[in-house]
Structures are given as structure tokens and as C-alpha cells.
Image 1 (tube, helix red, strand yellow):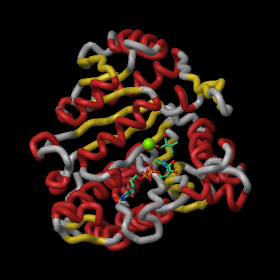
Image 2 (cartoon, helix red, strand yellow; image 1 turned 90 degrees about the vertical axis):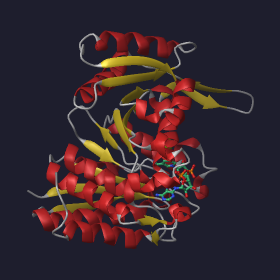
Image 3 (tube, protein in one colour; image 1 turned 135 degrees about the vertical axis):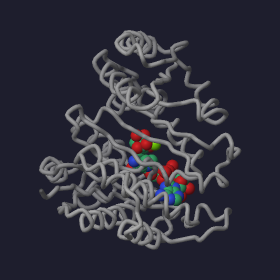
Length: 360
Ligand SMILES: NC(=O)c1ccc[n+]([C@@H]2O[C@H](COP(=O)([O-])OP(=O)(O)OC[C@H]3O[C@@H](n4cnc5c(N)ncnc54)[C@H](O)[C@@H]3O)[C@@H](O)[C@H]2O)c1
Ligand SMILES: CC(C)[C@H](C(=O)O)[C@@H](O)C(=O)O
Ligand SMILES: [Mg+2]
């Protein structure tokens, strides 16, 4: 059956990386006989310019009629001085809230062929395979009051029991099918919201006797991510800590452009996007790394469409291309074969199309 995908390219490199993902999904469609229908919607700065707001109603309608959402990135200097309601990032937060995408999965894997470029020592980065589970629709990003004037500013860190239970349960369920370990990251030595978070983690952990769990303060977690990253299996944390720790964790892979994500509603509906932003410094140059977005589309196939073999085919193709010594320009110091965005996409597609691709 035809799968309908809403495509929100957004700003900066958003178009380049979603075009790459669509080309790869089309190749998957040809190989496995699936049909995809792409419906394009405006989000972010481009939506402000063309429709007067960062998340127009028409975009919401397109997403509601779709089976999943593929997103590039939003934001850029052109809109940096806009008032809050006309910031591109506001559109991103609104779409996450509108579709109740409360669980954000950010897998971090070290690719053997890129270890040499990780700022971490090779033996420290080797074998890293963790899942950061970030709460996405609560916390500081959404709490009221939130405003500033010239003399003072306020943001509110608010979490309900239900919001915490939902994401923590998801993390424990994931740990069960991974390596049975959850690290819950908080700031319970200072924050009231973290004290409730910790209590709920302990209650939920009781239902999962086979899953080992630990609490870790966010400052220590930031350090341990770099000194001993392979000790993590599933990390679960609140919205802002998850945002910061996942960018930090991307350095293990060698580039922010490598990390995918899935933002899920409890019924499984999902939005898929790389964790990076619109990268205005490299936009329009055809040098952005499309792998984070391509791997996000593999997450879409697996989570939203149950297409496991197809998702594996994408991940295997990415790995094979990297193992063959190809990479995008941010990896130039390892002196491999540097490819543009479109060349990397074509390489991954040829790998998918080649009969030698192994599927798991
Ligand atoms: N999900 C999103 O849409 C999202 C996420 C983060 C930031 N942003 C927005 O993006 C804009 C720029 O933010 P920033 O510069 O702090 O973060 P960024 O993630 O856009 O870029 C940070 C650095 O990483 C590099 N980079 C990012 N993606 C890359 C890729 N695919 N390939 C190669 N290099 C890549 C950039 O060139 C830059 O040097 C801001 O407006 C910010 O709000 C949006
Ligand atoms: C652009 C910004 C609002 C967003 C976030 O903080 O969630 C981004 O950094 C991300 O990681 O998706
Ligand atoms: Mg971020």
C-alpha cells in the first residue's frame, strides 16, 4: 500500500538533506516494491516568509493526512531577531506539541570506519551503541510563564507525572530489547522537577526487575559521555538535557551530521529528522552530510511502517559506503574519498541497488 509522507524541508541545509532521504527512500521503493507519496509543507523560516507564520494550518493538514513526517531543519540568521512567535524554531516546537511527539529517540553509534576522526581516542569511541531517549513536549521548552523584558526574564520547568511516566516507560521497554540498562539523567540535587523524575523512575524500575538502572546527575553525565561512552545503553532524560547531551554525543561519531532521530506519539505516529540544525554556514554548497537524515528515514521505515528489512538495507548501505572509505567534507582530516551531498546520496543508492547488499 502507498505510504504518504509529509516532507517539511525547512531552512538552510534542510532541503539538501531531505532531498537525499527521498532519493534513498525511492530506491528502497524500487527494490522492495513500495510506493511513497511525498506531500510538501512549509515549516520554519520559509513558512514565515511565505505564509506569515512558522507552522501554517496547511502544513498541519498535510501532516494529518500523512502516515509519517520527514523533516529537515529550521532556523537561520535571517530570522534570528524576530519576535518569539515569528521564530522558525517556534514552528518546530508547535508541530512536536500538536502531534504529541513526546518521545524523541536519538541513537548514537560509532562507525568503525570513522573512529579515526572522533576527537575521542579510538578505543574509547569504539563499540559505542546507545539510545538517548529525550522527553520532547514538556519541561523548559513549554512551561508557562515564559517571557522577558529589559530587566528580567522567566522560563518555567514544569513536568507532570504523566509526562515523566510516558517517556521513562518507553526507555525501560527499549532497554528490555537492547542491553537491559537505563541511565536516568537529571539534576535532582537542585531541581524539584528532577526530584519527581527520580521518584517516578524508581517506581517504574520496579516493574522491570531485569533492567539495571542508575541515576546520574547531568553534569557528571556530560563528562562520562566523553570519558566512558560505551558504558551507556539507554539514557532517558528531560527535554533540554536531552538536547544538549545528544549534540555532545554526536562528537563520538565524528560529526553532528551523522545522528538521526525519531519523535514518536504513543500510538506510533512519528516525525523523523536529523538532530542537527539548518547549518547556515554550509547551506547551498552541496557539502552537508545527508547521513543523519537518511538514517532518520530508516527509523521511519522501521517504526512507522514496520519495514524492517528495508530499514536494515539503508543502514547496511550507509555502513558499507563508509567502510569503503567515502565520507563528506567535515571528515576531510582522515583523507578519505570526500563526496558532496548528492554524491554521497548516489553512493548509498548504488549500494542499496547492488545485489551484494546484505540485509539482516
Ligand atoms: N531541528 C532543527 O531544526 C534544529 C536543530 C538545531 C538547530 N537548529 C537551528 O539551526 C540554526 C543553526 O544552528 P547551529 O549553527 O547552532 O547548529 P547546526 O546544527 O545547524 O550547526 C552546527 C555545526 O554543525 C555543522 N553541521 C550541522 N549539520 C551538518 C551536516 N548535516 N553536515 C555537516 N555539518 C553539519 C554546521 O555546519 C555547524 O558548523 C539555528 O537557527 C538553530 O536554532 C534547528
Ligand atoms: C531548534 C531547537 C528548538 C531544537 C531543540 O532544542 O529541540 C533542536 O536543537 C533539536 O535538537 O531538535
Ligand atoms: Mg538540538
